[in-house]
Image (tube, rainbow, N blue to C red; front, side):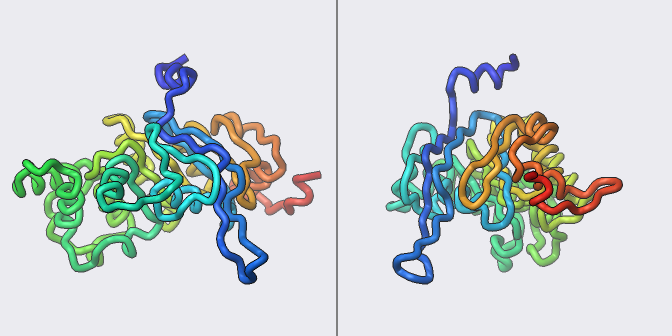
Length: 282
């Protein structure tokens, strides 16, 4: 058993969700929409846990509750033992929570300030989470160091988001997340909009970051090929509920639940032909 597996066996967890539930108002007052229903999982130190499912499965809603973008209707959700079920009430709490959990969106262009230079975007995040005694020069130096760690040299610091490619903008988004020195980074379809070759570069970058520092990933995706490459464990969601979970390699090698089998069957490969879900379930 590896050190990480021993630690997980001893019950250490950074994020704990138990019986998580989220209900949105429906088109009619008596017809609420249940987006997440009785979802439970744990995320441990230096681990990548993937949440997999089709659009509308509830996986992004789980991620948004974790970072405080959505409130929890019912159930427990904690980070390092502190409950996050009640949502953020004070600015100080929001900043403290952001130092623990950061969010990388699918579309980095919409989440980056187009008027700011890349170096200033990262430096702003460094400054928010650095100590009061940190000088402006130290903040700038740390921002440039983080950009270098994600494969963007100093020349990129003077450019604006519109001058970068999609893969480069995603590196900036990851750099901004790293600037807070978080324990957890939520990656919500973070490579879905990128070409396959650029996807591979970003996934390799994420692997290198985990190898160089202790950080956990909650990886939200519908792409099983990507999930297989990056995650240690995975949970499968369908219509707001967890229908399957386990170690990624084992679950994908021999899926039991019909929904997991249908997701795996949808991954293109040599000789691949689409198969109806009803046939897989039979």
